[in-house]
Each structure stands twice: as C-alpha cells, then as structure tokens.
Image (cartoon, rainbow, N blue to C red; front, side):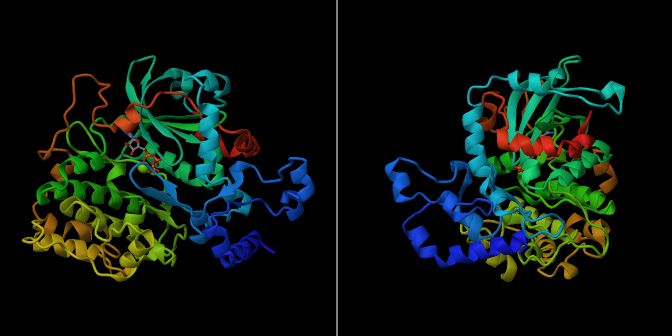
Length: 468
Ligand SMILES: Nc1ncnc2c1ncn2[C@@H]1O[C@H](COP(=O)(O)OP(=O)(O)OP(=O)(O)O)[C@@H](O)[C@H]1O
Ligand SMILES: [Mg+2]
C-alpha cells in the first residue's frame, strides 16, 4: 500500500470517529505506521505510571486531517504551501504531517528561548565553496539590527554588512522546514529570481550563503515597508494610486511570465514601497517554472487570493497571477478582497462559484469607474482560458482602457510622480514603516530541533546551490 493510501485510510477511520474524537476533545497523534501496542498504555502500565502516549510533537490538529491541506499562519493571513496533493513533489507520510509547523514551532521556541544572538550560528557557520571570491560571505559578516518580518520559513532581519556599513534585508530560511515542506526546489527558484532579475520593480539579492541549519538571502532593504501596512493605514486608495501600483505589479508579473515563471503569491504583504514611492515585489518562495502547455498542481498561495482552478485542484498556470492581480486591484480600491469570508471554506465556495460584487457608490460610499470594474471582472473570470492575459499576456493587460493614461516607458524609468512617498528619517536604519510586532522582537537566534537536524544532515548536499 502506498503512503498516500495508508494516510487516506487513516483519515477515513478518523472521519468515522469524528464525533467521539472531537466532541470529547480527545488529542490526535500522527506517528509513522507503528504497531498500535507501542502506543497503548495498559492498565498495568498505568499502575506503574508508565505512559505510552506519543511525544507531544506528534500532536495533530483536526484541520490537518480533514481539510487535507496544510495551513500556515503568517502574520496577517495565512499562506498555504501544500505538498500533499502535488504531483510536483512527494506526498508526506503521517509522520511528516505530525511534525506540522505549529508543533515544531512550539518545540523550537522552547529550545530557543534563551539562546543569545550569535552563539549558535558562530558554531554552525560554514562556507564550503565560493563561486565569486568577492561575494564570499557568511553570517559573521552581518550584524543583525532588527527583525522586520516573519514568514512561513523563517525570519527577515535588517542587517548591516560589517565591512562597508551597508544596510540590507536578510531572510533566513530553516533547512529542516524546507525539507519538511518539500520547498528546496522553490527556494532555488527564489534564489535564481532574486539574484538574476534585471527588473525595476523586483527585489534583488546581493548575497546568498548557508549555515549548517539555515539558508540566508541578503537583499536590498526596501525602506518604505509593505503596501499592506500603507493600505491598512489609508483603508482604501483612490483609483489613480491603485492604478500606479497595479501596473508595476502587473508588469513585473509579465516579466516573470516571459521567463515561464508563475509567481503564485500576490498580496499586499509581499509588495514593498521604496523610498521613492515605487514598488518592489518580494517573496518568490512560491514561484515555479511552468512552461507553455504544462500545469502546476501544488495547492498553494494565500486563501483570499487563490484562483478557482487552484481551489478545484485542476492544475494551474500563469493565469492564476492575473486572477490575483484582479483581487489586488479590488482590494486596493475597495479596502478588502472581493470574496472575503471569515469561514475559509465559504470563501472558497464564493471564489469558485459566485460572481464578483462591486460596492454601491452611494450606499457604501465607494465609487469605481466603469473601466476599473471591467478590468477587475475580466481578471476575475473563473475560467482561466477566458481570463484577461491568458493568451495576450501583459501586452493585452496594458492595452486595457483603465491603463490608458499610463506612460509605461516613463514608469519603467521611474519618471512619473509617485502618489505617495513614505515618511522616513535621515537614518538609514529607520524601521518605522515596519510592523512593531516584529521590530520590537528581540534578536535571539533560534535553533533547529535535533529531529530536524538529522534530516538536514542527511540531505545537506541538496543545499549546495546556496553556497556563497
Ligand atoms: N528586501 C526586503 N526589504 C524590506 N523588507 C523585506 C524584504 N524582504 C522581506 N521583507 C519583509 O519581511 C516579510 C517576510 O518576507 P517574505 O515574504 O519574503 O517571507 P516569507 O517567509 O515568504 O513570508 P510569508 O510566508 O509570510 O509570505 C515581508 O512581508 C516584508 O515585510
Ligand atoms: Mg511573504
């Protein structure tokens, strides 16, 4: 029997026991196909005060089983990176599910609580090989100044390069979590885009290196913070401003599509504002190479931004990014995403089956031009093949009347006046545009639990691509 079959059988049994398990709130553990007797506490055991419960780290959450998808919590919403139903990657066994991010995180936090900055990586840093002598760096070359973000796979810091005092953003990605989620290939793609892109609205990377337990991406630090924060402060944007932002993101997506890369995680949290008011698309962690005629099958993205074909798990391609651009434009103009519902399954239903609704200019006080409505409606076409951009790409999109007044060449040369310039002090290390929840976090360095490190050591050669 395949692992997937075994897992399906277990889920089936659990589903049938649903009422007993959940109404009585009994804990569920996931362990890789043991003999049940190994985890059965007999009366005699109990008398001897022996408990044969599996370790706490193997506790499962009900939604892990019943939705059959992995939900990752990020700071403002959740990003999904599912490896289970994917033909692009091997499905996890029950034991892999048992070490879900949450239980791992608890274990991880408790281990890390008192480890001071630097101590653990001083031991673990290791540069094995350098492709460019001048770019050979390791963790000791950077001083961590602040935490500026926390993502699914690790933290993002503002750092100073000790030799020249330059400020960068440094994303650390835990190798064990990458292995657990089958994300090594995605991280390689992220590296490739960050390192090689020549596009004015994409974040770029200066250095990449690895330590024993983590991979580090050192990128240009975009000081104005997330578009998300700015949108949150303003509630919604006037159409001109939304247009100025939308076109930059759509051009960037067009640039990636021309290289057969699908981005798959458009949302205001992944869009940063530069000090000149122009945007930078960040976070290529879900980007994937999908050639013409191919379909990707991983269930991934951020719930509010998922295209219907991702939810239906029919296979998807570049058209999911144009869908997500439709959601983004709507969210910028209206203030919230079009199919939002606090119940995620209801939200998925709305995305799949219901037409987009626009607010009433009088009743809701949110006006929207006919051109904007038309653009959003054609981007939020449920059938990807009929969606704007499916055949005609970015050229078809910039030809839409909503973008009529934009001079794309001037925009690409950053010659248009930006509608908003972020407030920044003279200080290059100003982090006032980033969430205090992160910037007030102390810089303690966490360590990877032993179980995770064993997997990392076994597969370490897979990380050779990340040598500096
Ligand atoms: N180059 C950068 N300059 C400034 N801030 C950055 C930069 N890169 C990332 N950040 C901040 O760190 C946050 C997390 O980074 P990123 O989105 O790349 O990580 P992630 O692990 O993929 O996150 P998530 O799973 O939440 O999408 C960003 O939302 C942003 O606030
Ligand atoms: Mg992100």
